[in-house]
Length: 266
Image (cartoon, rainbow, N blue to C red; front, top):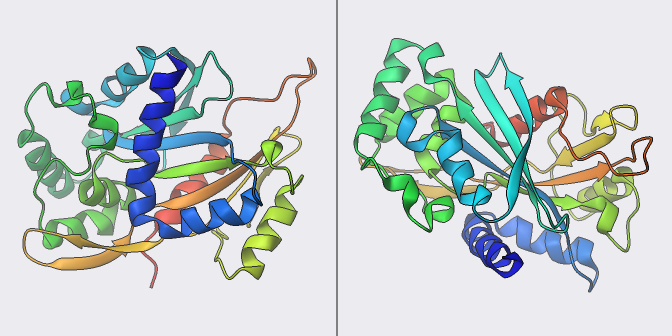
């Protein structure tokens, strides 16, 4: 089963790095000839029945993952869960879903039109977690969504792919703290997400996180093409609990700021 999980994430990585070339370069920069262990991978979806969080999670549950935490992001109107594999060298997976009914009627109508294009059983496709955008959308509708919810706009434009991969700093050979990782990235010319500070979290909450700002890539909409934020790379340092095991959950206040790595800034 571990081989199946490895194959799944190889496919997810190839799709991700195709529109996030900086991730491939950073991977090499931090690996220093060794390997990079992924702490977690993140996904976005809408809370419609045919593509909701649980539908995405089903692909993981059949491969030995279990649900390990639930989170609420009230300002961004999101519900989230994270999943862990019995083999802790496999990436954790963080899946969030947008509570579409909490958006304006205009945004709800756009999203409903997107989802109505999909067959009921679309989530059963074996490659669903790296299948890309399954609907047609105009640039006008994308920009309408963007004005209200960056999350909704990104998902509408990119569909089903990893929103980000995350380097486990705990497993790097050449770095032992997040400050050193951040400094190396900045020396190499990468721009970090500074919302809420470059480092989100601390040793007290047992998790420190930072991330690059998303790359940009050209997206073909039904009416025209736009260059928009694609995906980003995250970095995480975990600290041990009193039992000596590394904290494996997520900190909602930090994750809330990490979401903003794909903001469409000028």
